[in-house]
Amino acid sequence: MINYYGNDIPWVPSLDESGKPLYVQIAESIEKDIASGLLPYGSRLPPQRIIAGYLNITHSTVTRAYQLCEERGLIKGTIGRGTFVCSAAGVPQDLLEQNKPRTIEMGAVLPLYEINSLAESSIRNLFPLIDFPGSLRYSPPEGYPKHRQIAANWLQGYGIRAGFDNILITSGSQNAISVLMMGVFSRGDRIAVDLYVYPEFKNLASYLGIILIPIRGDPYGMLPDELALACQRDKIKGVYLIPEHQNPTGITMPMSRREALAAIIRQNDLLLIEDGMFHFIKGLRAPVSSLIPERSFYIHGTTKALVPSLRIAYLCAPQPYVPTLIRVLHNLLWLTSPLNAELMSLMIANGEYDRILMQKLDRLRQRNEICQEILQDYLEDTAEPAMFRYLVLPHGWDDTEIERDCLSHGVQIFGNKRFAVGSAAGESALRIALSSPESPEQLRHGLEIIRNVLIEHGSSRISF
Image 1 (cartoon, helix red, strand yellow):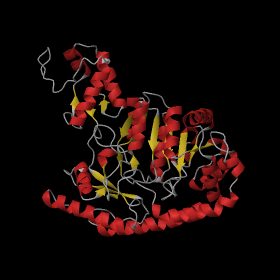
Image 2 (cartoon, rainbow, N blue to C red):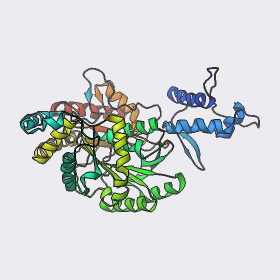
Image 3 (cartoon, one colour):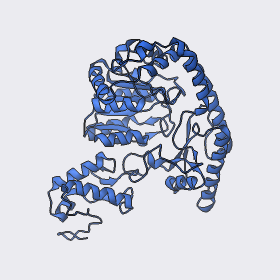
Image 4 (cartoon, rainbow, N blue to C red):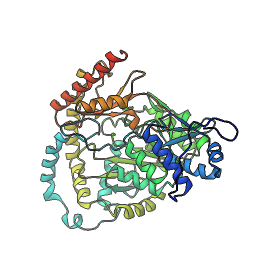
């Protein structure tokens, strides 16, 4: 295609007679062509003025369409470089998608169901202690003060020092993140994230029209200098971090990196969302939130650590934001189950939570030993009780292709493109969930299948 000035245009959107606004048609055309492969990831879109001139429409119409696609996580514009198709565009984002029958689940990180019998026994023993009159009626949206006080005391062991009036009880970490994104941020706001983020956070940002800005990192996590540069360039409002066992890379930030990031956040008046979903795995370093409590929202979920069905997470927020977050929680969910909050509080107060957690960590260590035995040629050794492992592939390998091949052999794993933010291709890698198979025997079988697929790829392409 050639425009009026004789310039070649590699792609233009398709318009129709549907009657939809032109910016919507352009956005839908971009999405359709990404899904079909006509616009593969990394493709550079024509400048907005070129599209506007070719279609004889206003520049603002194309700008609005590009903004809509950026909010959906399909494209990313960079000043001075242009607009590119995001590396995760067109890649499935649902981590709980239905697999084929008899598929070994090693994609979604499930909470090690083999310890459910311990939780069941504990819950049965706690029934005589439950405050049923309070647990079977409406509670305040943020939870009863006694449950919040128990949480405040308990979180001190994780480095969070806050009063009960800083804490809201939410129905899981995802609910807490939703409350924050709806109560503190607005459509068009920008949140800095790692290059790879778990898809549910990306999906929520897309639904709410919040733009994620990917920040480069190193083996110690997000780079402070890169975050500082992005603040100058992109008018960032917030930062989302998982400092303990980052999902999906498994990186745990050293204290020096946490302090450096906290300084950048303070200097630029940013707001921090700190997700402590895997804090229980290590939990030896102070959260970033403890360094800048006045600018931080700390989320401590219990789903991964214990059982998913209770759906309890604790959201610690600066006092000025608490009233707004309570209103959002009330409108979004009304309230978190008081019965579930009562059970979790009892398990924390009498030590059952920690007792079950210690046994879970022991079993996770055993699973990591199995993983290291089978994939020792591909993974560095580790003594930590990780729920998943991150396997970086050789240059030239496609993680989506290997994910597909493993699934055809009966094992679901997730390639790195599911987690990618922005247009950079980045490294090709796999996230392998060790906690999800039903038993150590099933885990071993799944890992052997993964190893065989990797060997096949190595012999047909390049060797390690």
